[in-house]
Length: 115
Length: 110
Image 1 (cartoon, each protein chain N blue to C red):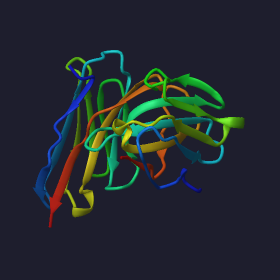
Image 2: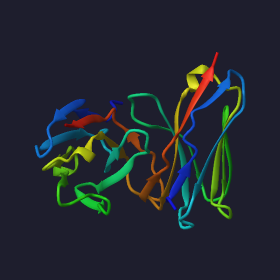
Image 3: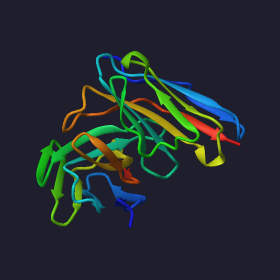
């Protein structure tokens, strides 16, 4: 079973620029998550999708971050414009379905540096 | 008060030692509790999960949850150098509102 794929693996941009990250979840997984992990901290959930609907986006800074999951499969996370404090690893995870508990499988992450 | 707290370490132990990792949390509504292991420059991977209070054992790993104290633990027996990683506790309320702790960095010295 192929794992969660993410691209790019690394991205360096200047503040106020835009950036987009892509995630391809494990085939058949209905739930997709985007996390932000700042160096030395645990992952912080930004948004959770169930198929192509949003379950939880309470911690997504909606003035600059947006995410979509077209056709309930791949997802993109966009930052526009980026700030210095957005420097972090952006992790995508997927799970089979949203029930009481489902194991999340994480991708390798995209490391973003904002200069 | 942060929602989930963990001692960041680093924690260094000799090979074969018993390791105790702990988290405290503030939201009594959490029902599912998980431990993830994260190697450097990799995504987290699930080690164990437990529902509500109690113990769960899987090989060298034992997870404990005490909801009355809002305290969870992970014990690693016969620790190996390959266990060197960051250990993240996490919790959820019925499949959403996932919250992770900041992680404890563990080094097992040969």
